[in-house]
Amino acid sequence: MDVVYVLWLRAMKQVFRSKSRVLMSVIVPFAVLLLLGIGLNGIVTLPGIAPDYILFLIPGMVAMTVMFTALGCGVQILWDKQFGFLKGVLVAPVSRLEIVLGQTAGGATTAIIQGLVLLFPALLVGLTLPSLAGFCLACVFMVLVAVSFTAFGVAVAMRMGDMNGFQMISGVLSFLFFGFSGAIFPISTLPPWIEPLTLINPLTYSVEGMRYSLTGMSQIHPAICLTVMVGFCVVTTVGGAYLFRKTG
Image 1 (cartoon, helix red, strand yellow):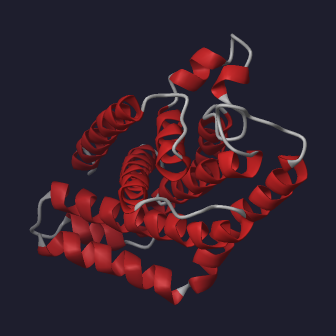
Image 2 (tube, one colour; image 1 turned 135 degrees about the vertical axis):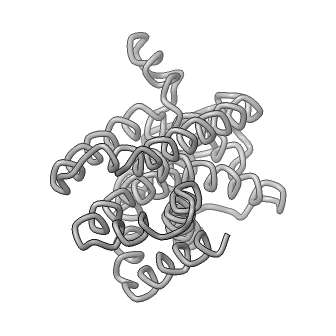
């Protein structure tokens, strides 16, 4: 497991040497939160779903931040390919599973840090810290999102050799995952033809689970959300490890 730790530590050093990277990844969702939340807070009412619109929006912005960061970590694989670092790691006398676990752990930790950082400015716009149990459950969902989408990003990156192509694909996937997650609009208010797309989106269950954790209200039972996210995490992690082992 020394390889896992070394690769994780490398990712952490890259993050803390580039503090602007964390800062900018928080500023964008917080700006969206302010623009949409404050602008629509007095207009949109969500009885039985959330006390006000800005509180409804916060869990979705946190999930979006974690997901965007985690999925984008696949770029690091392509950088490592381009500069020969990945080749050096692959020829080392270590298992491919340890390598992919280290890469996933580093990317997931980065995403979790950025999700937690966003919670602090969210306190300024109305979020009240939940109970310890609620906060811990929100962290569990953040971990599941981070690990799932980092592994998913690694899997996609391993099938590609073009960094620009990966960034375009990850951008489109991020938009689709977020757009059909119920992060901005309640699932119950969506048109009938969009609702099925939302329900097959794994990020939806993270958003709703996090919403339950932070506000106590959700349109999907938290046990279902947790089950779906655990299953998605297992599938993406196993799939990412399989594709990594096939890499020459």
